[in-house]
Image (cartoon, rainbow, N blue to C red):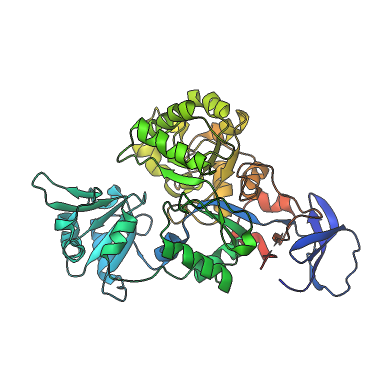
Length: 465
């Protein structure tokens, strides 16, 4: 945005007939009947003007790659026959590979190379589990990547020592075994985010490779990715950086407590101490009860710093709420998963854990800051779907998952309005001096929040560009 922008007749903070003037990336005036001199004029027609949304946890390059992949799970694929047909019809990349995403065991059981061969053996194929934690390769892909001689601990092996075709939490390593290709373009992701009203994002990919970080910076510079970007996966030695005009900012240090292999307490404590010593808070992936308890025990020992956060909080036992609050942690969670896969949770998750799934209401009531996010591509990117899920908590079949954890629609929206550097903090507002990243809606805010949908977004202003 270069010329001044004047939005007239907008609803701001529930007040109608408000004009808002934005210059040089900042809101410089808010009130009735502002001067129109030299400004691009946008008539809001009574629609709400709100701050730009922040997705506090997603994966940019994985989301871009996901768009070019074949769906291997519900709702597109249900059953082995449909999966085989989808793989047979799938296009290949420039090197002749098939890439699948979104697999879950309800489709065709526990996949390994032999099982995948029965579905599709003619072309090298890799399928990512819906959790993002595992890839399954068919025999052609196993051979092409040299898994037989590989020494990476993520390569699963059978009792004879042969690779099963399953590779756990080794995305960067596996990428080095694949045909050479650079990170995917982020232009389509940037356009989708803009259409949703998202003006800043936190990329939560752990241990970002240098080429991935350079690609994000280049996409921001070119305008392919017009959003402000906050990185959790920047190298530990890289200090926190808060000026988004110079490229991505650097935030807390991402630590993954993988349910497939939890770390010992001393190792985790050492990693957290190192991050804190580097003046980086930690952002710790916790999707199981065990992972959360390990984290809390270790933080009791090493201490916390402002900004330490729990990523996902998929299972948060009620008895840990006061513990989390005492440690001063915040939670970045994804209730959108309930809309996407709540039926699976009701079927597969231990009934004792179901009340603890993706808590929201009880976290806020306990005084714990809560931010909402997508975890795209593993959860729905659309923030309005996530907001709706936080409000109604309905699974695809309509069953409610954790009714007591529902949020009011304004609370859910606020989960997207906190600054990228302060997830769960106070919601940003359209006021003089605030940054000019704003979203114009077609209707007043109360009407939009009565039935949240991305169709309500009329225009997204990315003022810092």
